[in-house]
Amino acid sequence: QKLKLFKARLLAENANKAKSEFLSNMSHELRTPLNAILGYTQIFAADESFTPKQQSGIKTIHQSGEHLLMLINDILDLSKIEAGKMELVTNDFRLPECLNNIVNIMQLRAKAKGLKLTYEPGSFLPAVIHGDELRLRQILLNLLSNAVKFTDQGHCTLRIHAETVDNEKSLLTILVEDSGPGICADMQETIFAPFEQAGDRLNHSEGTGLGLAISRKLVRLMGGELELLSPIDKNPETGQGPGCCFSFAIKVPVLGSDVAIMKNTPTVTGYSTSASNPQKILIVDDELSNRIVLRDTLESVGFLTSEAVDGYEVLRACERFHPDIILMDLCMPEMDGFQTTEQLKQNSDYKNIPVIAVTALLPSDEKQQEKNRDLFNDSIVKPFVTTTLMNIIAKQLSITLIYADNCHQEQDDSQESIICPPPKDIEELFTLAYYGEISALLNKTSILSLEESGKYKQFTTRIEELAEDFQLSKIEQFIDKYR
Image (tube, rainbow, N blue to C red; front, top):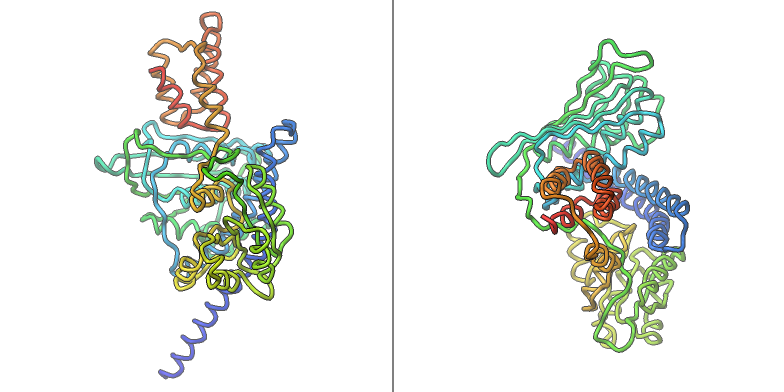
C-alpha cells in the first residue's frame, strides 16, 4: 500500500514538473514574436512623424498585443498558483488612477458592442493604498472583460465602495454587474473551475477560460472571497438577460495623499555620460526580429550597437566591437545564453563586461533564479517596456537618461501667461483630481474656459490635455502650483 502511494505521488510530481516545463516552453515560443510586435509599437509611438490616424492604429496594435500577453500570463499564473508559487508583490499606488485606467481600457470594448459601461466610485475612495496593483488590475480586467464579452444588450457596471476600518486600513468592496444571460444555480460553482464556461456563455470562444479561476485564487491571496450572485434582475428589459454580479471585499492599508509615486513612463530621448565616446551595446539573439527591435530602440537614443546571432559569435564580436554592455538571449541553439555568459566570465578580457539576460523564458524554480542572479548582472523578460530596459542599462553603465516629458512639462507649466481661476475653483478642481473624478473635472474645466472672456483657457487646456491620458498625478501637481 505504501509503495502504491509512493508511486502515485511520484507520478503526480513528474506530471506537474512536465506540465510546468511545457508551459514554460510555450511561454517562450509565444513571447518571442510578441516581443517584436510590442517593441516596434513602442518605437513608433515615440515617432512624431506619424499622423494622428497612424498613431491611433499603432496604439490599437499595442493594446491588442498586450491583450495577447495577458492571455499568455493567465496560463502561466494558473500554473504558478496550482504549484503554490504565486506571491503578491505589494507597493504604494494611487487607487483612483488605477481604476480610471481600467475603465478607460474597457470603455473601448464596451462601446464597440454598443454597451453602456458605468463606473460608480464611492464618495471617499482612499487616494493611495498599499497592495499588489498588478494583480488587482488583473482581477478587475478579468471581471469586466467577462461582463462585456457575455453581454449583448444593456449595461456593465463597476461599483467600488470604501469603508474605514481604522486609521490605517480601509475595506474595499468591489462589484461588477452586467445585464447578460446570467448563470443558473447549479453552474455557479463550475464556472470558477479552469477552462469552464456555462449556459449561453458556451457560445463565446474567446479567451482561455482561466480568468475567473485565477481571479478567485488571487482574491483569496488578498484575504477576500470572490462571490457570484445571479440573477440580479428578475424582470429584465427586452433583449437583456437576468444578469450577474461578481463581488469581493478586501482590507488594504491606506496611506496619506502626499506619498510620492512615480506612475508615468516618459519617453527616453538620449543619455548623458562622462565618457567621450558613445556607449556600445552588443545584442546577442538568434531571432532576427528581436535583434532589429533592440537595435532600433537603442540606436534611437544614441547607443552604438553590434549583433551576434549565437553564442559562438560572441567572443569574436567582443574582440571586434569591445562592447560596454551585452544584452544576452538565453534560448539559442548550439550554445545558449548561460553557456556563453559562463565562457565570458572565465575570460580575463571580458569577465567585467555587464551581461543582461533578455529572455522570454520565465525561471520557474528558486535554484534557477539564484543561478541567474549569480551569472547575470540583471535580467528583463520579453516583451519588455522600453523604459524598464533603459533604466537597467543606465544603472549598469552609470549613465543618466534624458526624458522627453521632463522638457515638455517644464515648458508647459512654467508659462507666465497662464492665468489661474479663483481659489475656490482651484480647490474644487484639486479635489476632483484627487478622487479621480475625470468626468466632473472636465465639466468644471469646460465651464471655467468660458468665464471671464476665456482668460482661464490656457489653464483649463493644460488640465484637459493631461486628463485625456488619465494622468491624475500630473493634474494634481499642476493644480497644486496655483493653490
